Length: 131
Image 1 (tube, rainbow, N blue to C red):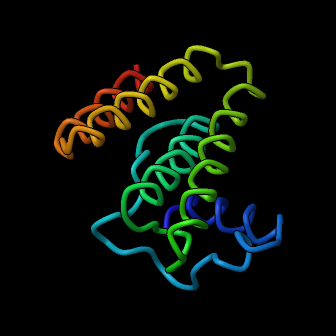
Image 2: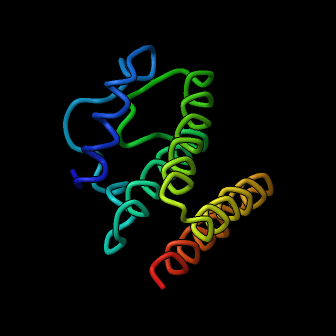
């Protein structure tokens, strides 16, 4: 598990509650592993938190284990907020804008059934953050 995903698991466990209890033990599925490779902190952590939120909204998370649909939706929202707050606290308003756009573009694409378009939005967003 990447350092960012390990940190995310620690943060969520530390918050406790239903979400903290839902943190999975062990490594994430290799098909959905770390997504922010090469990004510097805090961008890397924020991307991983937001990606986890996205995965929970639209499938299955890497850090959060199997949860019901309602908790997955709430957890996804919490993780979007966590990632954006991390960027805002660092004063990285450019990254906040980029990731907010990724979230919006993914929601639009997935609302139309375009999983490939959502992945393109992610790839473009991460590339923009790497510049």
